[in-house]
Image 1 (cartoon, one colour):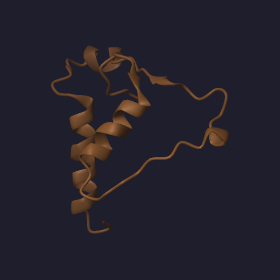
Image 2 (image 1 turned 90 degrees about the horizontal axis):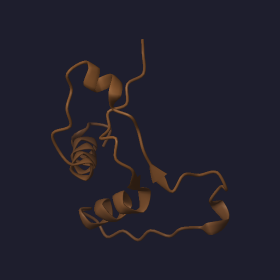
Image 3 (image 1 turned 90 degrees about the vertical axis):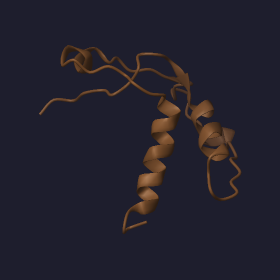
Length: 81
């Protein structure tokens, strides 16, 4: 087994994903950043290489934020819910 990154190859800010998920949540959410809990080496941007996936013929077809919302919707439908 090998590891494959399913990604676009474009850097993104984690806070942008969090904001998007909060906007699309079906419940009221508030996000609090506890500065003391942040680690010095934590990345501010997330970036992955899609090279291995592309070598198999894969191409990104949608927006990452939409995929996150789809994932949350799938979890909601799960029996473990």
